[in-house]
Structure formats: structure tokens, C-alpha cells
Length: 400
Image 1: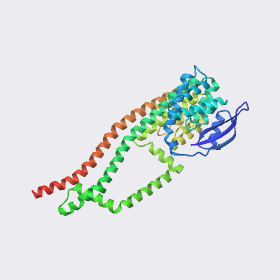
Image 2: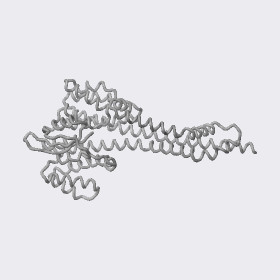
Image 3: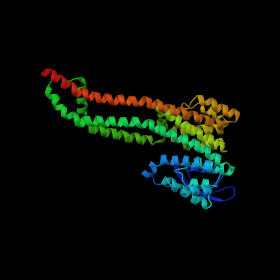
Image 4: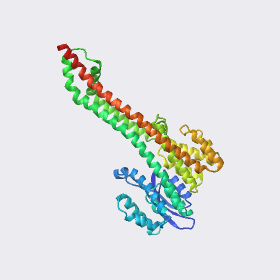
């Protein structure tokens, strides 16, 4: 995804400036056309990616959900300018306060709320900005923000749960590798000479550990170098579009974790599509915009095929049937929504189902992985203890 600066005129000839997120220049132009404005100037913004920006991404997503929730509650009672001025004076999170000050400043200068939000693509996605503009035009901004807040909160919670499900196994796996390396490098050499002086047949665990230590000492540098070369080659291949599409597909097929990724991605895609359609966007334009919701290249390619199929007059449900990573039970809901004219409602129900499924999968993944990693770590420690204790016990029996 990239950030594009634009200057555009609306149907009344008024000039507007702002920023939006898109995959390329063509997609940025399509997003502007979907908003019924005509680009006069459109250029990709060169922005610096620093560690601070990277670490704030999750916080910014939380800011977007919190902002939408606040406005959905307060818009019925106060105008936008007063709400933003009040929020800018609130104490608390300094980054969020700076964001409110910037929005209040821009709206005070005469910019619309959607234009002010569009200047902060690191917080507000192109979809959020478009829906805010649609809410302003229809006079239903409070309801639009309420729906956005519901969806963004669910999306943020799902991503947090996925991170929590993966954090514990990663920590245990890293600790296991560090523990094994410490035992082999620092502890094992002090016992190796003593075991050699015994001149007796050593137990299998001891021979395995000594062999591993000898291999690490002789070829450890070569193994580490080969690992980093393969890692660099893998990253280089992953950056190539054709390879990444295949890699992203197989990542979705990994048991448990891949299914969790599937459910989370479809929750984001279907939920966003439903909100866009409810906001009055045509289905082909909505499907073009919804591509930016997921970073999975395979799913982006799938969405392109679906859009082309819909443009040629095929039902959405018929287009979805060929996707091997789409939950089959959701097809009937989408088909029923198309036949009854309630597609937006059915897409939201599908998103709710995916949200519940991802939560259940997250809990199952934690229930399976945590004891498995504990058993693995315990087995490593037991192997090391046995490899040292068994020869000592045999020596004591021999001396006795």
C-alpha cells in the first residue's frame, strides 16, 4: 500500500486536497472516481518509515475505532466542529490528542470532516474516509460512524487475539532454542572430557548430545551462514509477486493457524464490503476498494477475479464458489442475500460468523500449542539431564 496526494474537483467545481491509500496510481484514481471527484493532481507521497510509525500501527487502528465510537455517540447532540474542539482539549493519550487537534484545525479552516481524516491515512483507511464522506452527503453520519465503530472494534479485537495466540508459542520456542544453545556451548564441554576419561560405553542420550555438540563446534558457523543465506533467498523470493501469491495461499492452508488467518481475513473483507454497499457504493467499486483491507496477495487476486466476474453479470455467490479458502457455509447466506436484495445484511452476518469462528480457533490454538510447547521444552531439559546423570550413575555403580 502507498499514500497518494491529490487535488481534485467535485461536481460543483470546488477544489479539494487530501491523501488516500492505494496499491498503485490507477487504484488511487479509481477511488477518487468512486467518490465522484475528478483528479487534477495525483502523486505518490514519499514518506519515511521509521520505527515509531511501525510501532504505532496497532495503536492507530485503535484510535480509528475509538474516534468513530466517540463521534457516533456525540454527533446527535453537537456539531462536528465543537466535538473535535472538545476532544482536542481532553487529556490522556498525547498522540490521540495531537490527531484531534489536527482534525479540529482543518475543519476550522473550512475542510469537511472526511477531507481532514483523509490527511491522516496512517490512522484512517481509504474505506473509512469514503464512508465518512458518504455519511456527510446523506446526512446519516452518526449511523455510519456507529457501524464503523462496531466493525473496527471487532477487527482490532480479532487481530489482538491472533497476536496473543501466537505470542506464547513464539516465546516458548525462542526460549527453548536459547536454552539448548546455552547448554551445548557452555555446559556440555565441561562434561565432555570427563565422559571421555571414563572409557566406557555411554548411554544413547549422552552420545546424542555429545554428537550434537561436536557437530555444532565443527560446523556451527557454516550452518549459521547457510541459514542466513537461505533466509535472505526466501525473503527475496517472497518479494516477487508470483511467488508471494503462492506462498500466501499455502500460508492459509496451514492447519489451525492458516484457518485462523482465513477467518480473520474474511471477517475484514466481508464486513468492509457490507459497510461500503450500505453506504451506497456500487458493488464493483466496493470490491475494488475492499482489496486494500487484506495484505494477503492471494486473497487480493481472488477479489480481482470476483470483481471481473460481477462486472460481467455473474452473481457474487457464483464467483465465490471456486475459491478453495472461502468458508462453504457462508455461500448460502450470500446467495440468499443476493436473491432477496439484502446482500449488505448477509455480508455483515457472514462477518459476524467469521469473527466468532476466529475467536473459537484462537482459543483452540492456545489450548493445543501451549501444552505442546511445554512438553517440548520439558523433553529438551529431560534429555540433557539424562545425558549427564546416567553416565554419573553408572560410574558410581561401577565404583561401588
